Length: 550
Image (tube, rainbow, N blue to C red):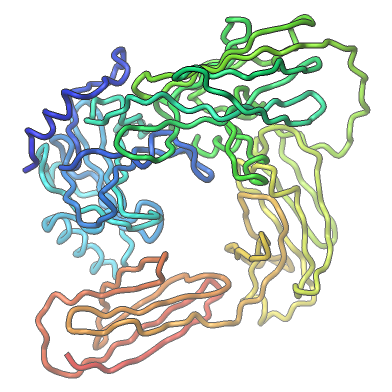
């Protein structure tokens, strides 16, 4: 049982999150028995998604005990190579669900149930829902141990609170967990979007604590927009975390307001419109836009005006104020002035080769077909298509739009090749070229076309994969068997291990390439036969056989 005195002591020091929150601040307890240090906040900006929970540090260790935050029952057990890795879902009263992800292992009772399902399905990856109330847990009960499984980049606990009915994710920092935050958000700079397409970065200067300004008046013509580079700091860790709320005022009138209280998983790719995607791709800095593009339907946007700043203003000096808040109502503000010059706009001739972002777009020639669903782009774009050859590539390269243009939905690309040997077709996939590396996509042949889906634009080509995966012995002992598996092109599709003809559970960590079986039974003192087979996505298969004594 957790140290309740510790929890009470820390709770007394909490700066209460939003006292007007509709969420209970005394319902959930901490899922860890150590001081909570946050490595990632709710809604934080990540690659292609908003962070869906909070990341609790575990002192860079695995096997830190994890506890149920409230009474309930285990509603889902998931073991995955990627994503959340080993994860538990608990349903509670008041229609809340908590999620505990990247676990090293579950508590013994839950671990036994998970392994029974893995052996039944002969699969490391399982995802199932035990019957309601079959596995009851009490508040503070041990349910697992922290780890680094799935797509985690270091040992920690990913903790979520969801609405059980809608599965919307809710900001856990609004529930009174013992998290200390007395630090104002940091404002680094702004990005001015000029009407002519130029982007101007301007550094912010902190005058007093939480009070930022820009030294000079910014000159603009007609209309413009603003983006902001900002992050938050919490007391117990130095990590640069995401902010909770952004407000932009023009002459004291609210123009834009984003507040990340909750969102749905099907909204999360709107991050690529919420930030300046092109600037991030080119410079690695995320500016959050204080305006909405046409096809950004992110529900966290509380207010956005349909026109650009300046469209309804007269020439002259105007005041801009941006307020940044964290989940504990610490806030910083940035104020600056703009000098607006209104001029008569020259009517430009419209480019006929524009993709209407609200409609389906199709392109077809003798070599390539492209299908982009409606609302895949956040705004209209000029269609870019180029076909060329490269001495390093066997097949032509097809450039579709550009890496700097975000894609909300996956689009379909079909490449025609009438001359490819039918035997080679089984080994062919479409690959996306990025930074001189090829990322192979799941592909299939239909008639004389190889077809694939991609959720990002760029350069594509056909790749032939006839190379088998590699299996390397890593460690064999009385305690465990470990091998390293890898595949350079189409990637590992599946693997299987047997001892004396019977399937054995081998856990797979894609980050290290290690597959591992841990023996639970005592050594039998006899020779045993191990078989491991690994296949890639073009069905090249490598098999090894080894006799060992145990």
